[in-house]
Image (cartoon, rainbow, N blue to C red; front, side):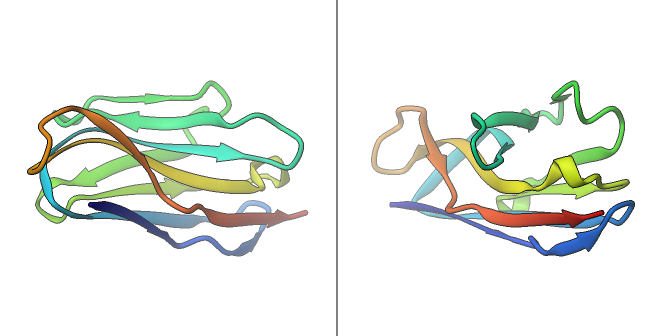
Length: 121
C-alpha cells in the first residue's frame, strides 16, 4: 500500500506565501512524476505543476512564475512553494504521484486527500 499525505494548506492574505508538502510512504520501489493539482468549488480539477524524477518541471499557465515545484527523492516528498497568492488560487490542492511499488512493478497513479488553501482579499 502507498499513502500520500499533504500538509501546509492554510488561510493567507492576498500577496502572501505558502509552502505545501506531500510525503509518499509505503511499499515504494520508485517514484516517477510527482504533481500538484487543484480544484476550486464548482470547477474542474486542474494541473498546477509537475516534476519528473529527473527534476524537469512544467506549470499551468496561470502560475506565471509565482509557484515553484521541487522534490526530495531521498524523502519521497514533493513541495509546492506558492508566492504572490491571489484569491483565485483558493482551492483544495491535491498531490499526485506515479509510483511503482515493491508488490507490483506497474506504474500506478496515487492521490493524496487534499489540503485546503484559502486566499483572502
